[in-house]
Amino acid sequence: MMRLTFLGTNGWYDTEAGSTPCVLLETKAANLIFDAGLGLHKATAYLDPSRPTWLLLTHFHFDHVFGLHTLVKFRFQQGLRLVSHPGSTALFQQLLSESFSVPWHKLPYPVEFVELAPGRYDLPFGTLETLPLRHSITCQGYRLETDGRVLAYCSDTGYCPEAVSLGRAADVLITECANPPGMVDSGWGHLNPEEAARVAHEAQARALYLMHFSPYFYPSLTERLEALALAIGHFPYTYLAADHLQVDLA
Image 1: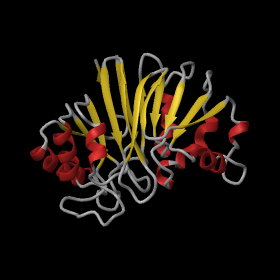
Image 2: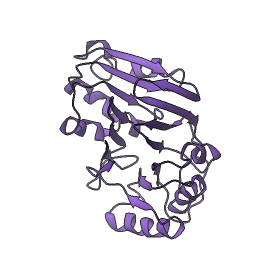
Image 3: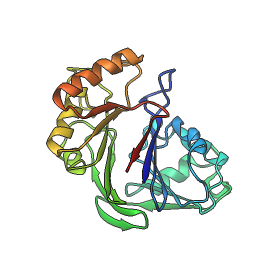
C-alpha cells in the first residue's frame, strides 16, 4: 500500500491555512518527497528515515525551496537524492551552501544530485516520467508508476498538454490551484479551479487533488471550499488537499 501525505498546500508563503508546497509519498521501495516548501520540516513526523529517500523538485522559486534549510534536522540512513531538471545541481549546491544554510556536504548523511531531462526513467522506486510545465521559469512535472498505481504531480503550471499527458488515467493527479475562479493566467503559469478540473477531465484521471493555493486569493478554508465546489462541477472526483491530509492508495 502507498500512502500520500500533504505536508504543505500553500503557494507563495505560509499562513494559518498551510505551509508552502511539500508532498510525501511512501511506496514499498522508498520515500518520495515532491517539492521542498516549508512543509518539508513536517516530514519527520511521518517518514521512516531508514528507507531510501528521494526529493523531487519541480523548480526553484522560493516557495518550493524554502524548506531545504531544514534538511539538517533529518537523519536519512541511506542518504538523500535530490532530483530536478538539467542544470539543477549547481542551483541545489548554491542554496545548500554556507551563504544560505548548512552546506550540502556537511549534512549528517550523504547527498546525491540527479538531473532528469524530459523523458521516462526506470528508477529503483518505479517508472518516472518528467515533462516541462508552463511556468515563468524552467519547471517540470512528474508521473510515477509504482506498486500498481499511478500518481502525477503538476505544480506550478498553467494549462498545457504536458500536464494532461502526465495525468493520463492517473489514480491520483495533484495540481496547483493558485488562481481564483475565472482568472485568466497572465503568463506566470498558474491554474484556476476550472482549468485544474479541465486537466483532470482531459487526462481521464481517477481523482484530482487541489493544492498550492495562493494565500492572497485563498486566505481561508472558505475560499478553498468555493474553488472545490466549482472544480467538482467540471470534474466530480475532485478533492481538497490540506496540510497533514493522508490518503491511502490501496
